[in-house]
Length: 188
Image 1 (cartoon, rainbow, N blue to C red):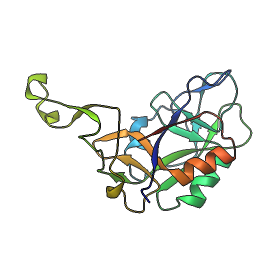
Image 2: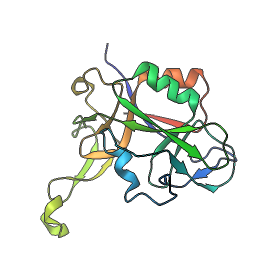
Image 3: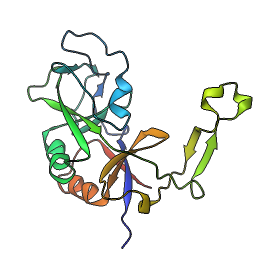
Image 4: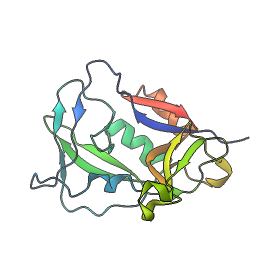
C-alpha cells in the first residue's frame, strides 16, 4: 500500500478567525528571521516566545503567522508529539490574550522527494541574474511528492522548497478526528 501525504496549511477562509503576527523573543523583540522555524531542522531558542495577535478573532487549533510559522494549540500539539515525536519540535509560546500556551510546530526533517515530472516545477536560470540560485526551485505548482523517498517520516519539509509542511495520512486523520480548527489539507 502506498502512503499518502498532505500539505498542511492554514485555512485562510475560516470565518471569524484570528491572524497572528510572527513570534517575538521574551523581551518582545522581533526575531531576526522568523523563517528559522520553517527550515526543516531543530531550532535553539532562549526563553519563552511571545506571539502577537495581528487581528483579533476566533483562536484556532492551527494557524500560520505572517512568515508561515505554524502555531498549534494543546490538542494538535499532543497529536504531533504522540504520532511523530522524532519528526517535530514543539516550542512553547504565549499568544497575546490567551491563558493557555500554544506551541510553534517545527518539522525537524528535510527530505528531497519532490516528484518533478508530476509537479509543475520552474528553476532559476542564469538569465534571472542571481547566480547563487541557478538550478534551484523558482516555483513549484501542482505539487506531488515521491512517497518512496520519504522513509518513516510522518512530518517533514521539502528539500529545496522548505516553506511547505507535509504530514502523513495518519496525522491528517487524527487531526480530523478531533475536528482541529484552521487546518487545510491538500494531497501531494
